[in-house]
Image 1 (cartoon, one colour):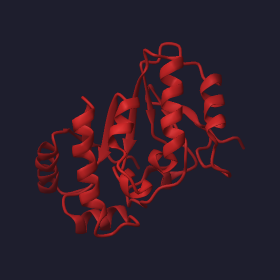
Image 2: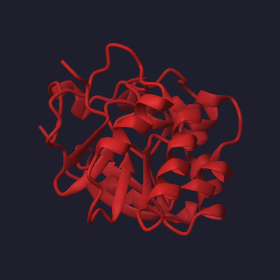
Image 3: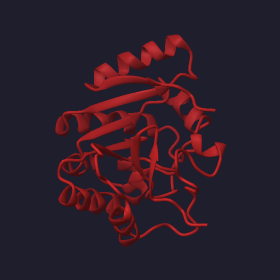
Length: 202
């Protein structure tokens, strides 16, 4: 079965460019099935090349689309070069479409270099999953491959994005206690980002 690269969900358009991710979050939507939205399948047998992604963009009807979001069954910055090149390609082809990245904020650790400035040069909006309020809790809920380092790296990445992008937000899922949601709001504000609570999708 063909794997979807561009798909629609709740009226939005999303780009699924990799299945790789340094986290295995307890609440991750991809543990629920093969796909979401109008996609039939979001799991890749082979990771897509940038040419595969561009072909999917060319074949998709973007008429009336105001925003496209890099968010699928993986962490988009795990395919960093493809992400940057695809964003440039879409911007050149559809200059009026806003581009957003939904990310776990671990791009600098994944790619072993600072990435916020370059990402913000090709994207209009960055949404970082804060997930929890301490390093220990964050590691427990995200089950990431950088324990003890991931939480601070995610916060530093967010602060850097705020320097270069006018629309940066941090999110938590409403599976954490209410008092932690308020602590998360304070952390978000200290980073200079906007705050949003997402509903857990079963």
